[in-house]
Length: 149
Image (cartoon, rainbow, N blue to C red):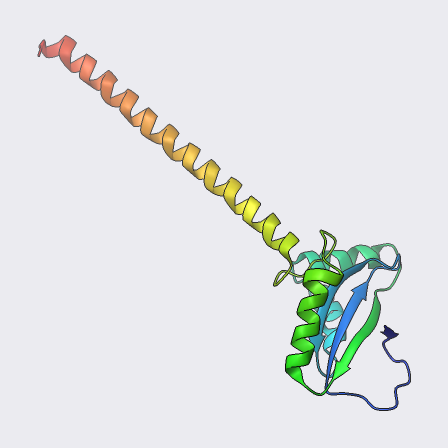
């Protein structure tokens, strides 16, 4: 990997890059052109709410900087997409990776959160149904006492 800004004989149009904590832990892999690699810090400064931006702000709070590295360069976008996908799914896969798309750990975490939300919703609905049934039985008993039906 090359640190961003390293001398390069010929720049390619597309590149795949990694954002690292100062510890060397890669927390984001992306692909882009131009200054895409720098836009994540701009998002973090702008208050965007995401795990990636939270990590960037945590690093800044420790008075440190994000390390930006170019992993791969090409003139063919499909090649960049393929390398980015492989890096996310295989090379750097893990819970530390903040990528949402293609990150099986992030997808699994989100599915589990959604499953828990749905379970809580089901439990709430069951409680509401049981409460309505209890109230209906109570009204029926009251009617029976009052009218003897």
